[in-house]
Length: 422
Image 1 (cartoon, rainbow, N blue to C red):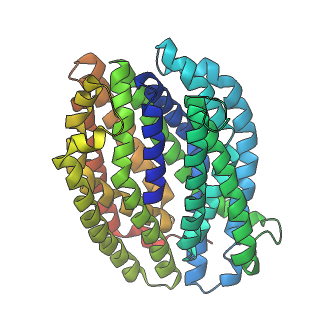
Image 2: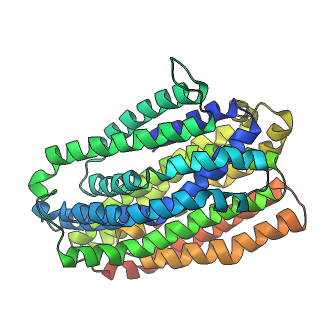
Image 3: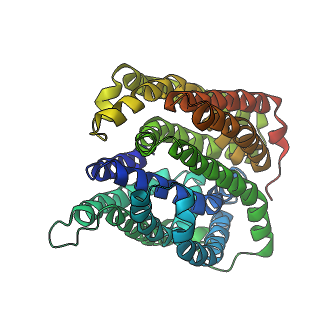
């Protein structure tokens, strides 16, 4: 997950050289793309929960059956979704921001990214499988290959190096899309090496597998969709204040991921450990794993985020050249750094609940707090009361802290220990 963030930071640093308009366009386009793929990303949770449970039950020859179901669903969902959104992008993007320069850069960037939806869906299914069967090193190996290719393609396509056309922000989208499909090819190759004897692509998924996958993945996908929609709406709210604020927020979110993605890495590990413990019929061990991983993740992230609090400009100056935009981002970054250990604790428990099959509970908590609490407050303190970017990010940190507290209560009650994923 750290490598994932390095890729995001490199992309942001490269595009940042083109100015705040391109930075805002890529930020909005990136989150619009996140919104488009969010539902399909939920397949990862379903695959991981089922595969981890099979490992705990010692049914190793069946662990790849959920993967087959995830790959099939990813293809079936992505093809019509890609066609609809690709041709709708020029009409929908202007609703996010009314700056014509941002729109003209953002639309082609988004369209290119949308062509990679199928690859993203399959890659997330593979991610769930590798983590569920204790082979995250294969996930890491593939990510490193993807990232290296992406950095190279972005460099030559954004700036037109070594005979390639100079495509600006669109080149960043094209590089990311192509590297994603290359990653899918690597995953399939590894699947035949490491998962063939466990049922990988040996037969079409059974109806029972598909139905269980849908039962686990749909709530997770809905939760991801509304989270992505909320982040896209947040960009729209900030866009009502100004383009510089959108550019600053794009950098803030990418820096926020410096801490969040390692936290999600801990959460994915916790999801597998919880699922395997439940497969062994040991619910007490499953609960203890949740608390143990929270302690480790919060400590690691606290060490990392403290540097951003103490030296915010050191991080921001890599991505922002404009002094006004830099000043806008400084205090929000410090606030984010303070709240990050608590936020990451919540992310670990959220993923642990997904690993236990409690995707419906996660969906209800996440959507309710984000849309019924945070979004109205962000609109109030931002465009209405004009309290600035710092007030919006303070509200975001507050809502994430509250979400962590709610998830701790749910984890302690332990109703998730009785969920069946057969």
